[in-house]
Length: 274
Image 1: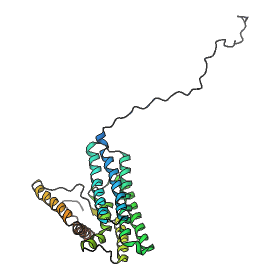
Image 2: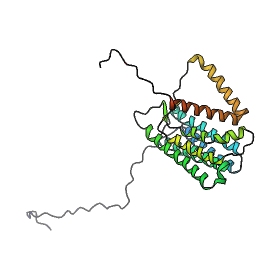
Image 3: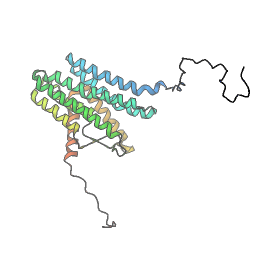
Image 4: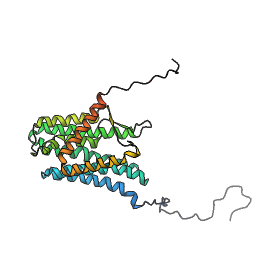
């Protein structure tokens, strides 16, 4: 029995609460719901990847017409998925990364393999080096585009270098020309390899190329644009190889005009101070 007059502290006689070894659960984050419709852009991106990989399969089987058709389908879906994501307000970092990775396969790896299987197998090392140059150039082009798209002063009215979908169509121009001549037999394999390397240089070049993302027309010319689109689709369905070759040549002409066009001189303001 303790003495109440003793000033020394007394030990606490209350029983201590039992300690539990079970860790406490952290509060669960609220689960975010998404409408299925908002996933349509991602569905289109994955479908474009499947089209690009299937194009390689058809090229291995020698069905180059189906392979090119699937690359065109991948290019159409690549052009629509981003706009659809902005329309549905379902843009995300993951969607942007998916789009970039799929573009590398669809417009970098697949066209290089299709062209190699069509014309460059007999060259062995030289043909494969040309394929590697083109694929790596597409990789560098996409990496530079991803970095530039995050900059605040990004100019969306033009590209720097040939974009990857256009590069995929340009690198297959020798195939389009060969099939347009009704033989489909590759000629001058060395020139095809050099063309692949040249297209790779066009993709990583620092010159400006036109972008049609924000192209505008007058309202009274809508009917003419629709008729031109119908004519293009009809030509693709009737004469696909010739039409694709003409489209490639027209794009090259536009590149040459923009590359060699002299810079526009700034108009001096007479009221400005010297």
